[in-house]
Amino acid sequence: MRSPAARVLRLGAGLALAAACSHGPTWDEFHRQVAGPRPGFARIFVYTPLRAEALNVHPQVTLDGEVIGTSSPGKFFFVDRQPGIYEISVPPTRYLASFGNRAAAEPARVSLWLGQSAFVQIDVVELGSILQARLQTREGSDGERFIRECRFAPGDAQR
Image 1 (cartoon, rainbow, N blue to C red):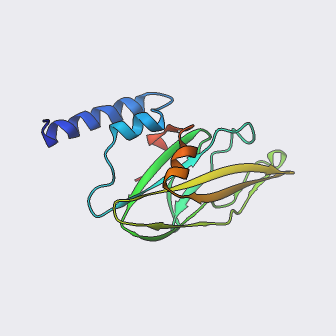
Image 2: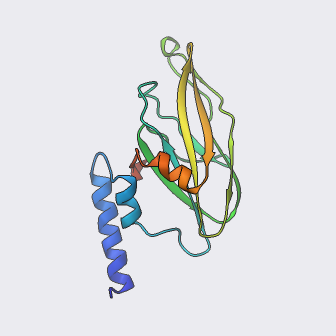
């Protein structure tokens, strides 16, 4: 049986290695390497499926108005928070006129339960000259099914 200190060192080394990799671990690798939320907290996973549309768009993601990370196609990140109800949004952004603007997205409301994980999917779609981020909450196994195609991007999350 390994000591808690050894586990923390192994986890830290794994996260440092993941940060050094340009593509990060897959969902399954991440799930095997990283412990769940710390006691008294829950975890929100934010992910963006890899799509051909709007690949160069990396919108900021906010949680109750605080920037928590950047959405990137084919990537996911997470934040741990105390149980409660939170609002995740992607604020509108103005790009160079030739590339259009990003419209305000309808925010997603997330209910966090102690020790549980919540999933928020962000899809960026192009509607004429407007890019729109669409946020959708997904339940446990459904969220895991969709996040599997993504890779962990620890540098995208601001904790």
